[in-house]
Image 1 (cartoon, helix red, strand yellow):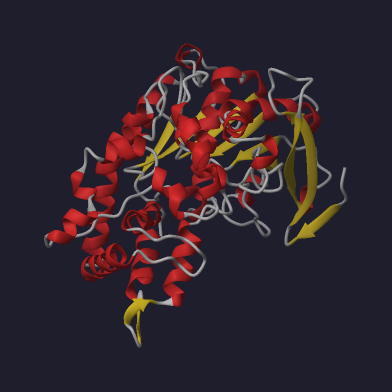
Image 2: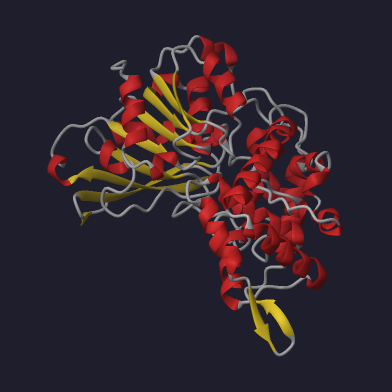
Length: 433
């Protein structure tokens, strides 16, 4: 075990675990998981229960907090916290364009990545829990995709949980990816309308940028091919509490005058590249739709197919008239892999994942209906990333689950709300309110 080190108000320790790549082949290949233990500096010697945090995504490592930021300070009042880098993310064994060719060709890469969903992540948790807690059940806090993992946990290994806390992450239990995106596009359109109502000057700004991009098809300074569809996907910002303001400030200084005429400024290009690139989290693009896959029906690039049913998102047609260009949100498309240099080598691999027809079922509605684990979930009203109706339907299925439904926060409420969201969930799960 590594030595401890300190940040303001906390003591930390790094942990590394070896787990099977495929838990159904426990004697086969292994991968490494990294996790950071955090405990309040005045509670180091106490025998505290454990809380394991499952980050949203898929494809993001756990938060790199400094001290007691966001929800962590509230958690440390009651728990030792384990910030787990889920398989393939952060400091765990990586899965990206640099490492995946070690697996072989696209087929071998796709077979490997099929083992990076919620089912494998939960089995990782159960594999490392005895070493962390001595075998005692722990509390799970799941944000967004981490909530999908927590729901799978309740379906398959509830004996490992003392409590489940979910923020913005109650999934549809049986809906196909098509159902997810049919619900998503109207929700995104509402978010865009609200943005333009707040910043009406952005209607013309977005049209001007989209027209420039459609005409010039620029390659950003970092190598990203900026298509009009990629520009529209900056709407992913609108799912966060400060997202509308961030989008506004991004758009306001997009152009600079040059000897050749107006061009996208270096500053704008840098910001757009950092927002759209998947270099730091390629698994998000690779297994995003696979997170919804269950059974024999392929995802088949669901977001792209369903988008065709919403012609108002066609920017080229919009620019032929005088309407506002609609941004899009949390979705991955075939062109995503053509635009992003961090993803281009993995396009065939992504196609094979989209065609896959042997996905294990993720959720057991019957077992959830008989749940005995205390569960509380924050459901954000009109959450851009997770459909509220889907979330509430799942909440009604999980026996004993208590909801905290609020429009005070967007999808990032557990971070933006500081200790308040977590405190409310703990109160509900403990039946103290």
